Length: 121
Image 1: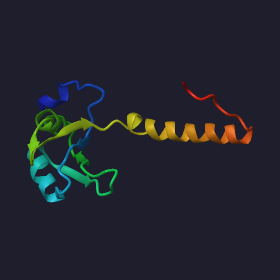
Image 2: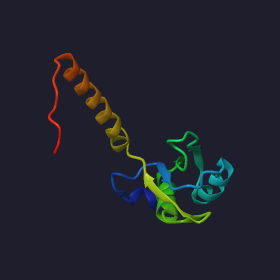
Image 3: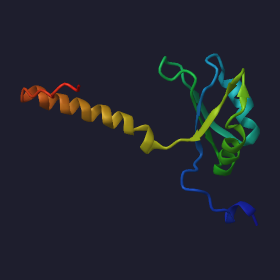
């Protein structure tokens, strides 16, 4: 019987890891070398736009492999940069997008009704 079946994981643990503070010139092959030591990887996406450079998403086949990688690689030194490895949480990722959208809606309403907010001192 597999011992893993009886382990209860925290709710934030999932197969998708979000990695920050990567060297800008890191390749997917180097990412596979680093993260592949902890288990089978389904996909790695390295950020390539100015906003996403230095970040990546790593998707593992197994949740326990993802947990093991997160536990061991958070703080790992790659090219004199310490990795920040987190579990991806969609509710936090989209919170910023929602705030921007709400601010835009508020600005549209203000413009429609010609409202102005007082300046802060």
